[in-house]
Image (cartoon, rainbow, N blue to C red; front, side, top):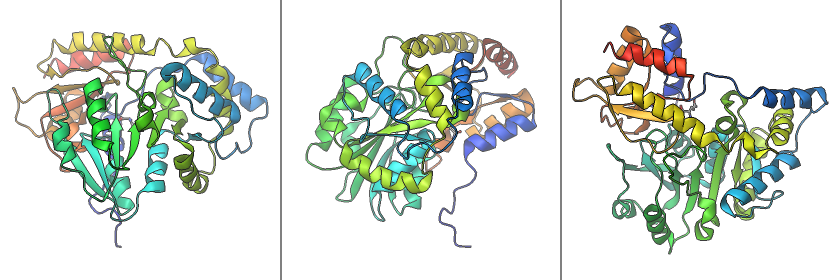
Length: 378
Ligand code: GLN
C-alpha cells in the first residue's frame, strides 16, 4: 500500500517501554510516574462516576473544568481567556497538538520545529502535507541562535512550534529568546503552537514564560497543556488547548469530529479536585527534589550529566567512554544492565546522534536508587 508516512515506525516510547517490559528492565524511558496519583483525586473521579456523570460531556469540555482552567491561567499568568470560546478540553496534550496542527496546516505549509523535539510533531505535520523545517539544537546547552532560525522563514512558513520547559533537554526559554521571537514574528502572521505540558516543572528559581504572558504572541498562539503531568496521571489522557476565539473556532471544527468530547467523569473529578490550588503548587519543589536526588546518584556513574532546568527528564552523554550510537547503547542498557532510557537521536528527523540518553526521573526514590545501582556496573 501507499503509505502516508513512509519511514515512520512505531514510536520510540512504545518501542522502549515494550523492550523494557520484555527484559524486566527498570523503565526510565517513557515519561510517566511509577507512583500513584493522590487518592483524593481518585475519590473525586469515583464520586463523579457514582454521581451519574457517565454520559457525553459537552464537545468543548465541561463548563466547570473550562472555568477552572481559565481562572488558573489568569492567576498564574495574568492572562484572560474566555472559558466558553477560548479553551477546549482534550484527550491529552498530544491530541491537542494533533488537532491544532490539523486545523491550520495545509499541503505545502511549512512548520518550524526545534529539535530534539517531541516525536509527534514532525509526522503529524507531514501527514497533513506540511513541510517540517528543523532547527537543530545541540548539547551541552541546546541554545537557540535566533539569527539562524530567521533563515528558516519563507513565504510558506505557517507555524512555529515551541516547547518550554523542553522535552527532552530540560531547557527553559529565557527573556532573550522571547524577545528574539517577538522581533522575528513582528511583520508576518506566522502562528505559534506552544507546547507547555511541563509548565509547572521549572527548577532553581527559573520561571516558566508562558506564551500567555505576551499579548502580541498570545493573539496568534495555541497553547497546549496536560492534566497527566499536573496530576501524576498520564493514563487518564486529559489535557487542554487555549487559543484566541478565531483560532479556537477552527480547532473545535476538527476536535468535534476527532474525539467529539473527552470522558466526563475525569473532567468532573479533576475540576472538583483542582479547586484547591495546593494540589499542584508544590509540583516544582517535588520534582526538583527528585532531580537533585537522581543527579546525586548519577554522579557516581560514568555518565556526564547535561543541565536540567525543567521537565522531568535528565539527559546524559557518554561519548567520553563509548563510541556506540545512542540507539545501540540504549538497547545494551536494557539487555545487559536492566535500565531503559530514550536515545535522543529519536527526537531528530535526521536522527542526529550527539551520544545523548534521556532518563525520566518521575519515579520513586527506590526506583531511582535501583536503576543507578545497575548503571554503576557500566
Ligand atoms: N511525553 C512523554 C515522553 O516524552 C510520553 C509521551 C508518549 O508516550 N506518547 O516520554
